[in-house]
Image (cartoon, rainbow, N blue to C red; front, side, top):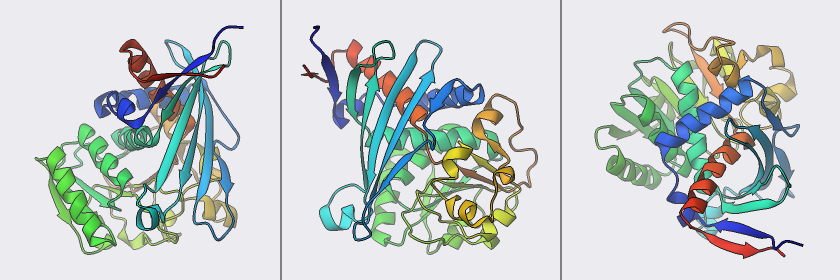
Length: 334
């Protein structure tokens, strides 16, 4: 029997091979594959493992296969989300690992830390969606939630749009201050304004991203302004039902996924929202099967819950670069 080894990449290794300018086109390609039905996902696309009520957290498994032009890739991401971690344990809210498998033999070839990769691909998914769904001259971004994810949302959108201003709100003022100082270091040409309320963030923003761990809906339908793109990336619903009435179009990454996790789940369960109410999956828009934004007045809601194809496509690129440069640590399985 042949010796079986797997390449391990810690976050420091992974970080060296992540670049938003490269990740965004990679994620766009993933959505093209979705639009052409050259992907395989589990049903539902995320396998959620809830824990007992006394534990504020859950695990999610995200297996996927994607037939990239150069080669096919299969893998799975396992991510835990525990909102109390920062305050109680000094740890990130989310932690993740990812395994890439050889599609010829099925054996695992790479095992990597995936929380930073998740942040990059989530930001890139928003940026790709916004390139089709936001006004082309969008200059003002609103971020609700000065979170780890909130940082990469802004960095990704800054690659697509000429941003003049980013308005941010967080219930933790210190978090908002830290966000501002960190983002100014990376985006010196963009004004970062700390707002006193969510409503102040939304007012006048071309694109609004909600990136919180709020356990209840807080986003009011009356805040939605003509021409706005609203993006919800949270695991739970941050949106009040009136938002659905205000939206001219609701676009998702996968309909199946959004029926089981994310901002729209409560409304699917209650019957307020039905599958026919979803205008399109993003992949259909990317390949031209459906139109994105059609005028400057449309209010569009985009809900990308994240899919495993995004993770493994980016992870495969990281793995190839690390292997070519001799980075990481080889571990013997048997």
